[in-house]
Length: 513
Ligand code: NAP
Image (cartoon, rainbow, N blue to C red):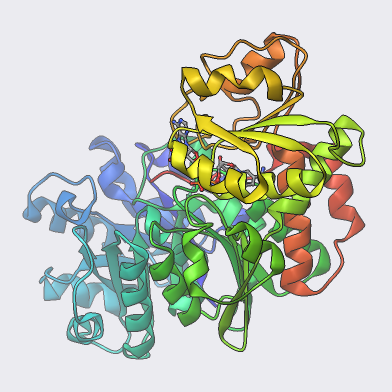
């Protein structure tokens, strides 16, 4: 099964050892990135494998390949030779692997490595994107049977990832390392086993050292949250598709349940700006189910073979699952929203409640349909006014733009104000979409956003004396429904108590690069 490699990028040997010791339990192989060491420290690399006490890769990455080594090639060869010199008959005291690039051509050094059992990782880094014929490239790189071929591509779309994934299946069945670098390739690092990769590179994110390569995940998160070491060819895959995905409670929620239930399944972030491209990847990987978030809740409809009544009536979908290789869509935002709001206001319905909805995207569609179903009346205000009109006309609600004319209508719809735009959400602009409105303090105010826990909008409402609630309770409720839909199982009680007691700070954030 694929191994976890901890990429060590500190400036000193001592610091690298401290980091390794702290994360040793999550590490199968360490990579000493000599290009990140201070020049004096590079004199002492030879003893590193002995001090590390586990298999180590010796790497001196050039800037052209995305590393930090700026010296000449002659000096780099000498450094590599220093790392491999005085080989010990006990191979545990030698570097287990040496990473040398495809265009590196010093046969004597390679021969010395082989003689003492150091395996060659022959690498190719394409920092400007994918190349056409990846299997041919892999074949051309192999110089002897015991080498590991490493290909790393900067990917700029789900389509690029698909190309790498398909190539990894058709390439020669030798040991190889396949990496999709960057934000769009994050899931390829978690699902290395599905990419037929010998290992995945990770880093110790909280140690604040420089990044080894774009998109590397935190080693602890990889091992504990995603249970990397249990992922095998049969592991069922679920995930979250959106763009950008900066922070979401869903990976923590689903993976924690899979762990509690000992289910052979994993839930990963799938950042993608094209839902079509991502669904092609999902089909290639046999993904079973996806949570759908901003901005794909409406655009995903085109790919659905079947839709629930909710999805049909509101025109937005946040949950898709596969059945006989076709996608089916449901909307769990509806129930998640109404259960959360009704509990907060301690009512069974919204009769006689006048509500203002800010926003007219996918989430607003779910909110409007629930307010209508529960007997409330609403005003919908959106930056792009015609979208508010489209939704409002379905329920005989009022509508307007997010301008002075629209704002004048709010006092008549101010029992509850619900913020459904992405303004204020982490990774989006941090504006207050209702900044021109002065809260009276009597409104009940809900913001669907939960990262950050308090948006500028919600903070202002609370400061004006309003009762406020963010979207955390809603997201958990809708995720519970998704879990049941995806797996056909009940939510374990244990997770509910963990949510109640541990709350929003327990879960992970997806690295930005
Ligand atoms: P969406 O379909 O992409 O719609 C985005 C909406 O935000 C549109 O109405 C858009 O207006 C508006 N908007 C974006 N930036 C704005 C700005 N700077 N000022 C004013 N309006 C702005 O997204 P969505 O799926 O509806 O999701 C919206 C938000 O709800 C997200 O933050 C999402 O995380 C949250 N949400 C939370 C839950 C939960 O369970 N807690 C569930 C669903 C959604 P235009 O039409 O003018 O572009």
